Amino acid sequence: MRLVAEGAQLVEVLPRAEYEEEHIAGALNLPLKELPTRASEVLDASKPVIVYCWDST
Image (tube, rainbow, N blue to C red; front, side, top):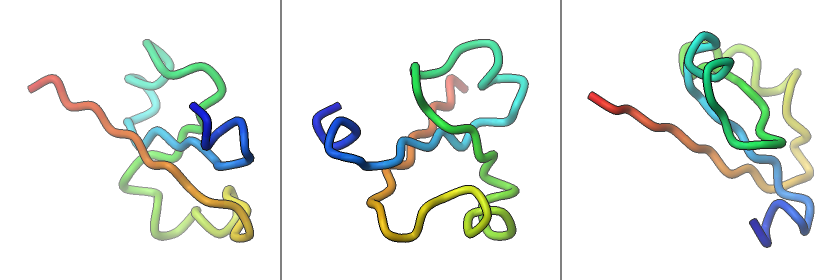
């Protein structure tokens, strides 16, 4: 979490329902399927991005 404390953006690419069920505190939700079309409107291009995904299957 040092990178987040230094200004990095933490993004969980889980589907919304999974994100709402459980997510990392402070993480943004940007579902993987929306990443190509919404990243520029949701993320700050001047800051590093940490992408997190969990698949329990």
